Structures are given as structure tokens and as C-alpha cells.
Length: 453
Image 1 (spheres, rainbow, N blue to C red):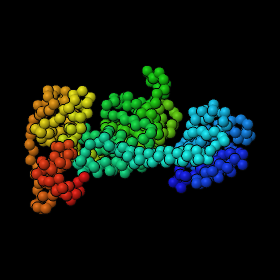
Image 2: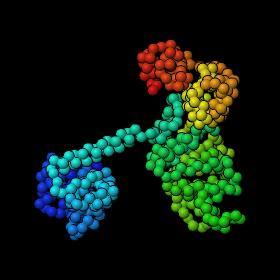
Image 3: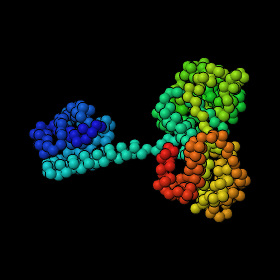
Image 4: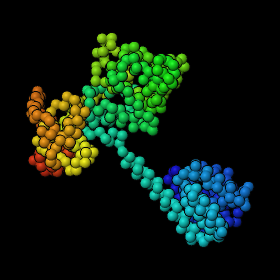
């Protein structure tokens, strides 16, 4: 409803004298009138009133209540937020209560006192405006689709912004990254940020299913298509109709199925195994792989035409070892989650443990870190997790930098030190400033200069 209609009142009354009396009594509101159900619905669509006062006895059933209840149901169906105040006779409490049960805001007995009617209408307007403001605030603070992804790394933040930009397009997205870097988390975030978020997100791992079963898993099969096909079964593509389909490890898709997948992407129709009917499917495709598909296409192991169909938007996900400060941040996050799940109460990482986590190269990426922290939460004896609990050896890596530009070297060192410090203290600015040996305002100034948030 538009803001200019927020104080608009519709008066529905077939008695013209009473209609004029009500309008005169509530002259501080911008009111429009109607004397039957059809006229009231026209006025409703034209003016979108925030509040409606209505009599239940309307023509052609002026002595009954059937028309009034029909109108009440139609008003709430068209504009469910509208506050409807039902005007009833002195001895008609049963119908008044029935109207409230159907969704009316309030009821008022005739003959009415103008001051009390004005008070009731004013209260209805305030309720309407409060609900509207509450809805606006909920929309303003609606959780980000990627809110569950923990990172402070600039490159990873750029990945998140790219996901948000392409979410509401129809482009096919390819996520490239090592195993365990969070490709499925990003694919789900892409789905949740899109207009398809109310539909299904369906994922299938092309490397985890035997080649002779993968076709039927993707495309479904008809009853009797092969031995054991006792009934017609939908495939993953058809199941995801209207939503998003994630093809994980697409590089392992058998060459024999690549042509059939390409045809589906081009035609947007499928044929089940053993079937002859073309079935239209509307689905957004997101694929993921840790392999170099361009190299595979040169080796004739992956169709080049399929690659270009899938790679409309390519997003490279950095490994955990390249995401400065993220290992410590994620470790803190996993400790909180697993401590809650395992009923471990207050549990934290020791400083030595944080250093070990920061220095480890994490070849298994986030999945390896998650498993390590879960084990540590279970095995820790006290309320501090030690390097022994994590099961890692402390290896200090020395980063080589060939740059001789002193300003660039200094800025890079400052940036890395701040990101590492923030990761080590779980984002606490005061503790990070103490760790870095600067005041909090100085740290804020440096972060602002370096573009860190």
C-alpha cells in the first residue's frame, strides 16, 4: 500500500443517512464511501484504504449478513493488512464475534458514539502503521544469504559480492576451487539470494555415483526401463524444477553423459531413461569442480562446447591457506558450534593453538579444519583447547616477498598483520589493538586507510 493511502478510510453502509453521519463524524480522515459489496471492492482496489468500517447488512441481503461476510472475506483476501471495523446492531454480538474470528480488526455497536468510533478508527490506523513499519524493518534487517559464511579475506569477500551480483540472473555459474573450500555453501548462498529461494536446492555429486547409475539419477527413468525399475522415478534435474541444481565435481561427469547434459542445457527438456516424451524443466544450474576443465577439454576428456555452456560466470574460490586470518576466525566459529552441540559449555582456543592453526597449510581446507576442531572439542580436558587436542605440529612458515617498493611492502605488512591479529582475537578490535601495540583509534585509522572493515 502506498504511503499516501495510509490514512484513507472506506465507509461501507447502504443507509445513506447513516453513511453521511459516519462520514461527518470521522471528518479528520480522508474517507470514501460505498453502499454495496461490488462498489466497496472497486473502492478498495482504487484507494487501498488502511481502515474499513462496514455494515454486515448489505443489498441484496440488507436484512441478513451473507453479503457482509462475503465482503469481509474478499477484503482480507485482496488486502490482508487492512483493518476492518464491523458495525452491528445492539443485540448482534454473535455475528460481531464471528466477524472478528474471520479476521475483522474490531466491532462497534449501533447507534455509535462519534468520539468512541473516532478512537477505534485511530487505533486501527496506528496498528496498521506499526505493522507496516515492522515489516519494513524486518526487510531491512533480513539475514544475508551468505551470512553463515565466515571470512575477512579481501579475495573471499569479492567472491561473496560476485555471488550476490549474479544471484538474480539466469546465468549458469561455475565454482572452481579445491576440495573443502566451501563450494556447496556458496552454491546454496547463490540459491538463497535468488528469486528461486522458495523452491528446491538439489545437489548431486557426479564423482560419487557409478557411471551406469548416474544417467538415471540425473534424468530419472520410466517403469520397466531396466531390471528393478518397478515404478517411474524422477531424476535430480526434474526434482529441482523451478529451483537450483548443483552439479558437484562436474569434471568427473562421464563423457557419454556430457552430450545428453549439453542437450538439456540447450533445449531445457529431458527424456527419462526408457522414455520417449520430452519433459520441459526450468532449473538454474550451478556446477563445481576442483579440476581444470579447459585442460581436460584439450585432452578430449571434457566437451569444449559443454564447458562454454557451463562457464557463463566462473568464480574462483581461494584455498584456506591463501585466506589471511580466516583459519583462526573459522576455528573460533567451529569451537562455538561444536561446544554447543557436545554440551561442553565454555570452551576456547589457547594462544598457542591459534598460532598452530594459523601456521598450518590446511591441504584439506575448511573441511579439514572443521574435522580437527570437532575432534579437539571432544578430546579437550579443560576449558582451553591446546595444540595437542587439535593434533597439529607447529610449523612456522616464512613468506618471501620479492617487492622492493617500501611503501607497498609496508602497507602489505600492515594489512596482513591487522588481518592476522583480528583473526587471532576473533574480531575483537580492543584486543587486536593491544596485540598490535597501537591504540584503538590508531587501529581504526589504519584500517580505514587500508580499506579494511
